[in-house]
Amino acid sequence: MKKIITIFTLSLMISSTVNAQDCSKYYPFTEGAVSQLTMYNAKGKSQGMVEYHINSVSSTGDATIANMTMKLIDKKGKEMNGTEYEATCKEGVVSIDFKSLMGQGMLAAYGEEMETDVKGTNLDLPNDLSVGQSLPDAEIIVTMSMSGMNFTMSTLITDRKVLATETVTVPAGTFPCYVLTQTTRIKSMAANQSRTSKQWIAEGVGVVKSEDYNKKGKLDGTSVLTSFTK
Image (cartoon, rainbow, N blue to C red; front, side, top):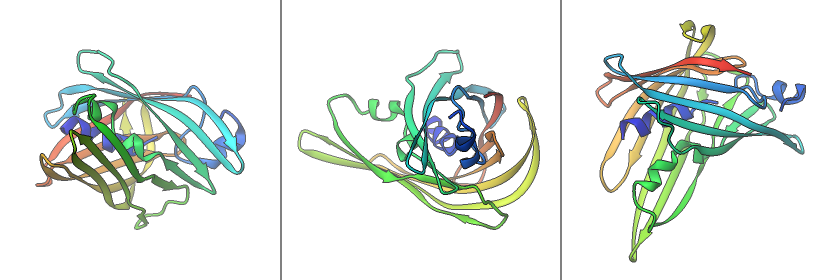
């Protein structure tokens, strides 16, 4: 479950035309761009990597749409199933498909015999960030049915704020960033969890660092940008 929550956090991240790139200030809407983030536990031990690939970029009316794939690679280097989703840039706001808040393995864990219905609210990031600014909530609700019984699991991302500006150095380089904070609440039949996280996002790159904290406020994991190409 901790790995799933870390992916949620990372998912709060991340065309090849001038107009497409101008629309999105913080996430590169460039076909072929790849971001690789390495995940570490609280003791600094590598837990694997997450890669984000921009597969294609297209335009529909006044919106620019990036088709992306998120790939999870475990600490042994084994690649897991990828999750494909979309990010839409329109009128200076990037809206990330709420389905990206959920890895494919999440539903697979409940078995293929279950029928599922997924609804939610996209994760939005405007171009005009400023310190002290509040950002919109995001949500995903998964309803699963099996043998006449229904189960619901929800993920709610709230308290999204622009905390500060900082310059951070990671393996991929040194970047001036905005620091964002948020709270993620997961409710399911098994358990309820509440966690907080911080993300450092850089112009033209996206997320370069993130930190995940447990309900007691103790650091539970860190992710840093290992490489970035576009």
